Image (cartoon, rainbow, N blue to C red; front, top):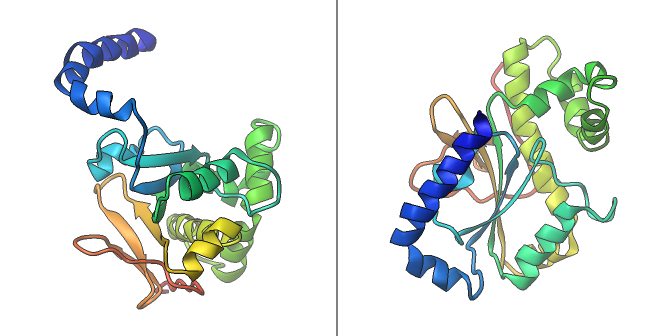
Length: 224
């Protein structure tokens, strides 16, 4: 059964990985000092530590359906608490919002009426927080094939969350004093590549040897 495999993995971790890295975990027991706030989707195919080859303690991670950040003040969300803690208490200076290809949340957003009865909580989450992305995509990209429309929705959703982040007082203050940098990424599951938003041309480009900090205002373009 699946849980047995998880327990076997736990035992393997304790007997081998933990023993080999005992000094690291002893160090982590005294506190954390992550370098990046990494905001991504709950999708099981996304592993921030795996794709960035990071160690425990390197990333402060916030995950939810659709890598969504509610605007500041809309309600007292877990996401808001995590953001404030990461920036104020931990002093993080880089924030990544990472969407991904084949995102089920974005598929649902484009056909949101179908979710109301089957998954009412998912419906309410996406209807409440995904409407700016849905409206932008459906109003401006009519006639696009479904796969292209989904790709655009995934990209625009990431940029919407960047804009939502900028409504947080702690984020705006740090950005104003150049103490914080925002990054908009898309992880492509089938290729393993990460695409970062480039302000130079308003497109997502393959991320290789240099970062693409997000400028404001955000503009993203798509070839017809």
